[in-house]
Image 1: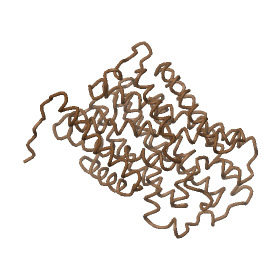
Image 2: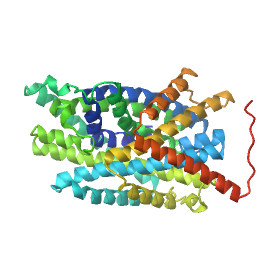
Image 3: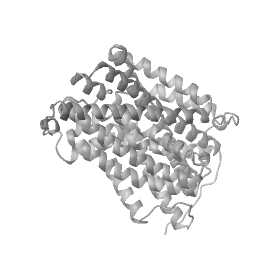
Image 4: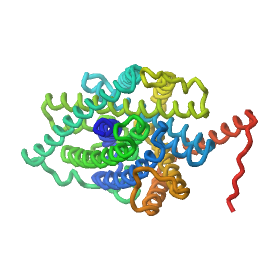
Length: 431
């Protein structure tokens, strides 16, 4: 369970805090704290659902895709699986941009060089994954401990700077007209959803976790709750050091900005900068793991070319899936700034959450239970569905358009391939 929780924390605490926290503050000011807690609440609901689904289907490795595939069949499974995969692969790109920004800042290079460091990170993580899942897990556990220590040092400095040295300024927490209201809170929440999406990584590892589905479910819930505490503390610390109006949506290294503005000791900037590199690297590592395993499961189920289902038992990996993920992540680096890439990924995150909620309702209806059962059924999935739909409505138009085009395109591809193979259409009476 500790290792599984570390994988979840490695995926969650990375992009959200080190890369996108500045975007959230820029959008909603100090109300970003509300956004983090709001999204954290919804993430807990979804975490409970995924925990139960993982206990119902402990042997599958495709997370949300596998749950939908087993609940509703290949059509919805194919759509959900591809969207889940591209969401995960795109997330690697957003996280890698953050890594590149922090690395360039530490070395004194301009922001234009960050893309090269992002590409380098993707290549290195592909190699690490190709070395085998066990090595990736062990590396992630160590990285989580190190980066949490760096975050603790940052929070301690912010508290000392504000209250110990007497620099506390209540106006830092002010919210201007643009940042005020439900709209900005919703916009910040979209960014924050990207940060919380990593806990699905644990769902792809249920069959590998000691203690089985129950341990996986507890790890999912624990990683979300711990991340919520860390997120709120970091947002508070960022605003203690710098007024909320100083952050920008496209900035990929907000903690460096805060430390520079408060004239922090170089030693602290170095420690936190290294922690940021470790955090983004570990988050990308966990996302790499999730992406490659989900595409492998799609290939294994016959919904992608057979080459992607080739499996190396000795190293416990699908090498073709790892390489495919590296290529997709590298290409996505050039689709826009970190905010644009993250918002595109969030569409896939919300879509898979929505379909997972319906999958849980399906399994409960046919009385297929696992060893772990989420509480407050059917109210919990109902609230989760309503919340996810509301957040999808608040997505930027660009990501909604891309997501909609992807869904329609996948429907066309599925039925073209279905017709090409001459397979029968399954007829279902609804009334």
